[in-house]
Amino acid sequence: MQKRILVVTQHFWPENFRINDMVAGFVQDGVAVDVLCGLPNYPKGEWFDGYSENGPWEQTYQGAGVYRAKEIPRKGNTGLRIFLNYVSWPWYAAKELHRLPGGYDAVFCFNTSPVLMCWPALRYAQKHKIPFTNYVLDIWPENLYSVLPVKNHFLRWVAQTVSDWLYKRADRLIAMSVPLQKRLCERTGKPTDAVAVIPQYCEDFYAIPQEDAELQQRFGGRFNLVFTGTLTPAQSLDKVLRAVVKARKSGASTLHLLLVGDGMSRAGLQALAAELNDADAVTFYGSVPAQEVPKFTALADALLISLADTPDLGMTIPGKLASYMAAGKPVVAAMNGAGAEAVQQSGGGLVSAACDEDALAENLLSLCAMPLPEREVMGQKAKAYYEKHYRRAELLRRLETFILQGE
Image (cartoon, rainbow, N blue to C red):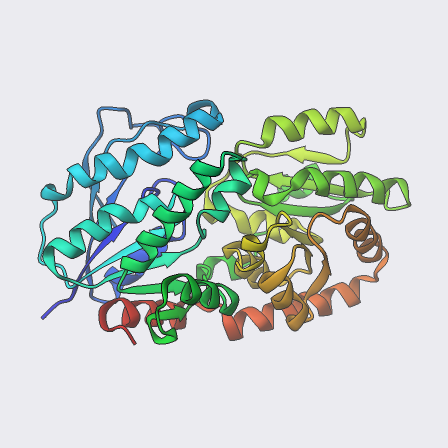
């Protein structure tokens, strides 16, 4: 009999999240899938074309049924609007559970922020007595504080209590790294066999270079340090921008930071770029579809990954690291913990501590001065690490098995 999975996630197609490919992969593997999600407005907080507060509420995606629930959009990305977005979708989604066709063998939550995203999944699983697996990508409440600086002790206590309550009630948890697995086991009391370590894979197309003549004409002739993804405080890109300017002043005159993405930090970063008075140091390209990212990684001389200096972020391995390594280019990592260790183990890049502007600037200087053959070897090592640890087929199979069988 065909297995059926209910996927619960606030962010889904046409928003650019890896759960889109996971769902397509599940369907390709013969699993029937329905998705309960929100209305697309991430990261700008504006409704995507064809969507509004009036829906559409039901669609199909790659053979999966898509059921959408209301949410208050992140419009403006202010602290208040992000908070309202965080709390509104789980509430609306829980009220829409009755619309789902049912007959599922398991419930799976792709749990980015907020942790409340998993509450409708938990309610459905408990009511229908089926196993619930929560894939913890952003551990709460720690991740909350990297976006919203909550100082009130009572509110922090509430966030901690709610987060622990939700994690404990999942039948199974998935962590991206061993340190995150350990933390979740400590907080929930679950044994390690109930908390699997399954890193984020990347789609196969990231490993296929896409040469683009227009991009080459526009940005060629410089040392392009490329960042792809969302611009939020969690990436500490202000530190990166300062490090780039320092490296340029110290001799890396062709160094150029190309930010491919958008998010709540963009306006602040643009203001900082103007303040630093180095107009050639950075380009804000904006968001592109995931399938176009290989055009930028092919252009890149090196690929940047950075995270803020917080313990919770040190436990994560961002999904973009897999796509960077797949591109076969040197990785410049400004981060701590599991992600930094992966880059060091691979030999495919240079690592500095999170938020250490001077150390990052030194690494950028070293990379700019490095002969091309040495950088190519570094990129080859990154690609080899991807092929061993982050291939889609193997990790997708492990996900399916753990969600449906718990092993």
